[in-house]
Amino acid sequence: MTGNSSAILVLKDVSKAFGGMPVLQHVDLEVPRGSIVSLLGASGSGKTTLLQIIAGLQEPDGGKLSIDGRDMQGVPAFARPVNMMFQSYALFPHLTVRGNVEYGLKARGVDRHERQRLVAWALQLARIEEFAGRRPDQLSGGQRQRVALARCLVMKPAILLLDEPMAALDRGLRAQVQRELISIQRAVGTTFIVVTHDQEEALAMSDHIAVMDRGQIVQFGEPRALYERPRSRFVASVLGNINLFDGSAEALGPCRALFRTSEGLEFVINHEVDLQLATIDAAGFRPERLVVSADPAGVANELPGTVEQVTYGGKLTRATIRIAGGRMLDATLVNVRGSTGACLTAGDAVHVGFPADAAVVLTE
Image 1 (cartoon, rainbow, N blue to C red):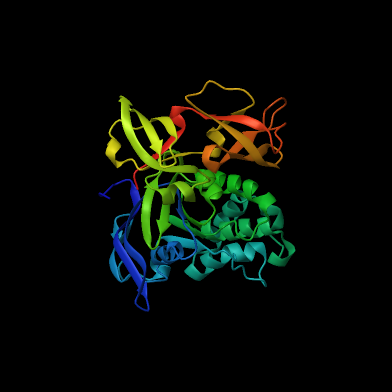
Image 2: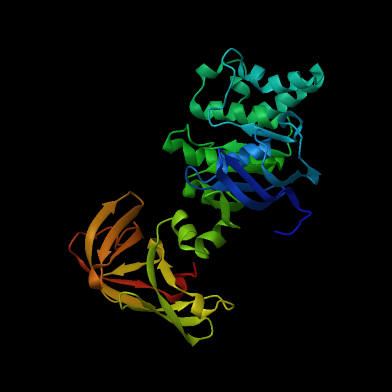
């Protein structure tokens, strides 16, 4: 990546190995100022090590890292303009909420009047004023998370690092906490870098996502762009379920092609104007883009099929449909009154369709 004055964090060719085993390999990354960026990947992909290198808890074996234009080589963690919110929150059990939030300011030697002002601001920002006199063991998981967040933000870091911030929360709380984190970030403008292995969390929270695999960033971009235009099978599968077909393409017209699958099926697909057809070796269709109906729906691509399995999920129905050659397709249907998803049952004969612009075209 090239230099960018709007980037608050720049990593160039950063590498790290433990015991001779590479954990990070030639990582380049530019994080836009004031944004929420997620490092998304499975365990062992290198995302936590990268977060620790940014924090100064680990030193890279090679490469450069700068924050706000300042080279961080040799700068210890305590002297960096960053703060880190750990997965466990790491609150002091013997201190009150106010005491936890104030702790870092005291350690830095901030005078009493300024401490009071900043703590009041942070408590209000995180909406925990009413809990100021409680200890952490008297709070819920969501409340403890807000205390940990306030303790970090009160120090006014340029970058806040969040390591799996939703991991300790019940599933029902996650959507609410995601909204709260976004709201707080927008209010203060601090750059957030979030480590997560949850693709739904990354898509919901982020301005940009860095997808990591085996110590490398394999694609970086806005959530919609990565979801709709992944560069590889790996990125396509990391960012949600996809019905993927191997094959090849030939031109039908500008940005339009006939895709022949290795199973002998043919689909009409749209593609980006600068894409070389010879490089296309796979095409996929997201489950929510499939149209499932008892009768032909009139979309560009339609196949007869049989419903094999139906799973009701409240607002959504997920169906597995067998098409010619025994191939299974996953479909996700919104449940509204009179919709197909609301009345599908195993054994139903259906038509499965998808428009040409639904195709996710892959070259890797």
